[in-house]
Length: 347
Image (tube, rainbow, N blue to C red; front, side):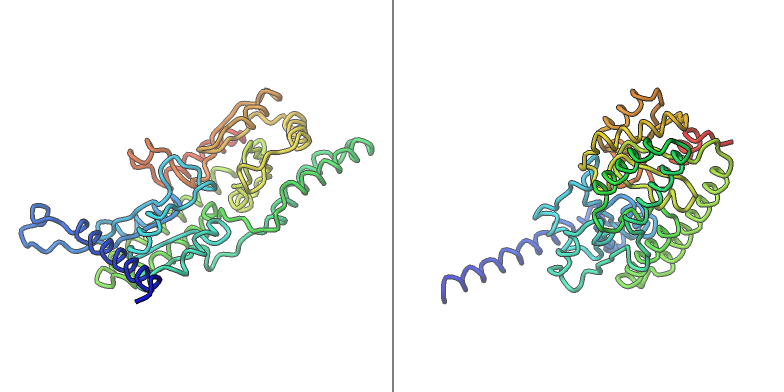
């Protein structure tokens, strides 16, 4: 037997032992079992981002053990899976991720996952908004704000727009699909399908739970429509990355962000100057900042304009304290509506 063959064989043994040990450790002890001694095995579900985690918990209820791969408090865009994460995924029943636009590493990882794992690309069936389309809408809104200014000043702002466009456009799609509640409902349905495939014995429960969650999403959508119907302004300025395009598009809001889709992309001085100018000229009272990221850009905008700051949470992930107290996606989005109503002066 050659050395390479021995190494491959030993590697296989190590993996097999690890899997066996994992199964033994996860098995309930006799003290934990009910009198019948037959504790049903829960579905093991591993999800990447918080919305998928919360959707899965709502669908699976008592029959699913759902894990959030992203550690609480960690910013999602900077996350990279560890070997232990990959083992956890490979030993799960269901692995759910948002899509290759959000987690390109998951798209690559799925090729090596055991065939028995139900892999859910939650963006399937959703039409992704292109970054260029969203940015063009935002830039058109900015141009309308300045259309009555002098030609020389307009020329200066046009050059600012060109720089902003060059800075923001990556030729990709907006991955924050869950911020449109119709998309969120599609994601729930994709997860539901995987639950039914892996555990048909509890199909009725999963179907009932999924339907109830979709109904709650529809109800929240109606609350947003009513709550944002009469506002003194529809301009949403975020001192963070471009995460709220779907939400803004759905409810007819004029949305502009200091950064592109990547939260580590620093805006240029001209980008910031343009935003400061827009806030001042339109008498915008509030600028928004994001969860789990530095609010320094929003703070700079507030300091330059006298505007106040409000949190707008894209729900990629939650802080450790929120995780412990059971914060939900629906709860976050309800708080977002309250922030938007305050920030936009809605009646």
